[in-house]
Length: 161
Image (spheres, rainbow, N blue to C red):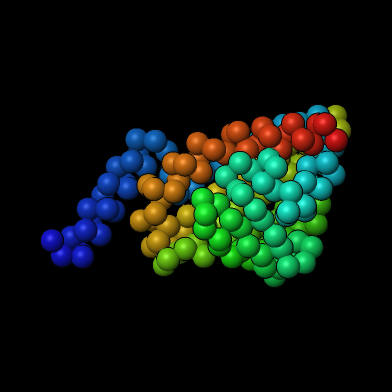
């Protein structure tokens, strides 16, 4: 079987799985908390503390406080991956990306203050590029399944102060 045949089959399988389950390459989860926006934001800015609520990570570090262009590393499943902040709006949102073979994993986190003093916060994961298309069926399902628990753990920490 040629490499082209393998890629066509992988693409067809991925497209079929996407129709059946929703996107496995781009998904979002939102939570609402009674915690103030600064409580959620503080946990997002504490990169070394990410593994305390993001159970998919064993360690995380940034080379400087999070801001546009800051880089760092994430460790998960025994693998260390670099990341770079590619979007940043203080006290509101940030986006970082992790390179993948022939693609990238893009994570966006944003929050909205609520009138009652609480916060709505959203975490979006996107697998981009050709590598994202191929790796989506393998990585996307796991990320998507873990995201609600990760968000709940962040909510619990923010509410505990």
